Image (cartoon, rainbow, N blue to C red; front, side):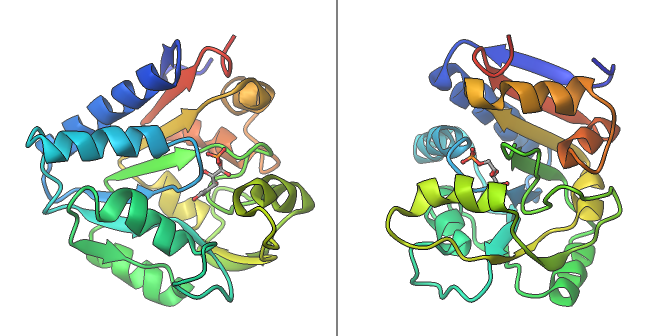
Length: 231
Ligand code: F6R
């Protein structure tokens, strides 16, 4: 594996949640006005719940941090259960007592808002089964900008698991690879045997737009994975 990547393997979901919460808490202690790009999806939820517990217990304070939305479906209202904005608010913003947010509405608005924050301090990311980051679907080169796009069949299929009977929206908007890769720290959380091959491709394979996550090695990257995802 490329040097410069910090890889922390945890035996189970609980260990992953604790380790990720430790990492994120340390960042906000060092810089209370941290700007954080926030993934939704299933993987980070136990870590967010652990952070919420720590906030409740007065162990860490996110009140000066800014939560920045990573991705969203197109044509989905706030009260739609598929809204990623609402998922981010429910799982991260409200439980952590965060009052400052940047919503992803349009590429121009988003880029201006991130520039006003002087960039992203921390990007918390999950790994798509096809190597996507946010909705940067393969192929996405490192300079892919914040944009609207059509989701790939692979992502439509994997996202269907979240929404039960509801159809997966086919259009999306995502923070660009350019902004993600410019984050001062990136934290990639990965669980499950089904992510094993793509995690190895991302960390050990060639850097390629076919595996957008492979470009994370250019960043100050910390990967926290469970044993099933890294064996
Ligand atoms: C969600 C997101 C996605 C997920 C990825 C992994 O905001 O950006 O890229 O991080 O699809 O999803 P899970 O964690 O559900 O396996």
